[in-house]
Length: 531
Image 1: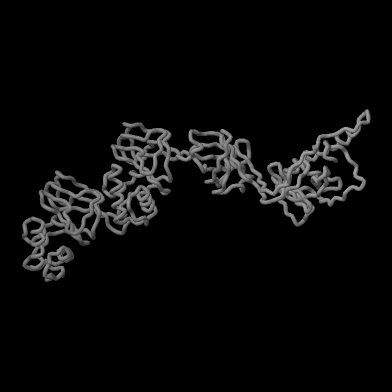
Image 2: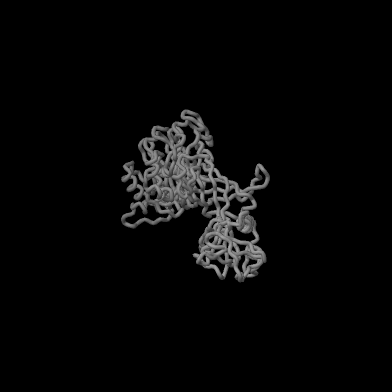
């Protein structure tokens, strides 16, 4: 065939090395081509292309002469370049772009809803979901749901007083008390904290026959520790001596009470060590008597765990100085108190169950379930929320389950036809039966750039996934393949000077209208005839 399309006869036809076998490469036992539906579908395309090429040739041959003996011509052939490229085959699935509904935000306590976040509002870390009786319920980031109060220690000690009268002063929740501090006052008289494991149960004084006991011993240890043995003359021997009485009198003088050397029952409350006040059971103006619960204080080992760790991480992210180690220490308490003051919570250094909701990220309020003024109880749903991030979800047929894994990149075709990248964040482990038979796994994808989805909700999108690929291969348009009578395939290559020649090729992977070819006589840049 000449450049202008006329039929030429070769007196010595060129011998062509022919690749036998099927286009999938069976002629070469060293080449392994997976027998999958995706890799073999190109055979249908090849067949159609070859039929088109054959039709053109037949028309050219038949049209070589006409009734009046004048030679007919056909249009000049078209050429395409042999290229080296990557071939990628994609599968496309119908998806939906939207948000993921979460569990509702519940009231932590019995009370009246005094405010809520508005529908459509994004609540970020440190933001307030609602208030009940004006007490905020705050969002902090964390994977672990709140399941206990967060405070300095897991254990607590209830303190009981013995003094009778009217409370005139009392410490506040969150304060730290140590040896020598005044816990509260009754009729103006102080009740002092001292260290000891034995609770006060009797008055302690100097008797004709010296009083002895563990309570006396811990009183002496406390007085010495507080500096009331300046001469070092005390003997801590669990015996109330004249010198013990002297130390008591010095202590009483410093307190501003009658220095009679007698420690009455109710003057002292013993605790094991320095403690934080978790709660206070009395208030100024209240009448109290023996056996009256006074306060609850921390005791035992510091609170530790993953919930403490995520609390510290959240406080650090909000700008508060704290040692992030999962163990409640002085820096944790300081950060908690500062955060409570800033948020409007009672700065008691304790985060009671219900004051904080831990969620992995910000959320969007999409429904108010209990309006302002409504009476609610613990656990009553107040707000419906969904993820702030928008996700693409689609059903992956069970037969294609192996195509996707968490973290795998995908392409999303948006409703306006634009493309945006995304990545797989979850693939369901259990298949769900489909409405039209079969089963599918739900897949969730997050967009790399969430801004492209602003204003879109429940929008249809196409999810495009690379199902197979080959890299750095020589390829030609699939329509360039020519089926040889003796078997195998070839391409018609521009030989120069208006001539062409057939070069045998072994077809391989097909995608994007191209087919991978292997041939010793073909090079990248060669021009091949395409119909």
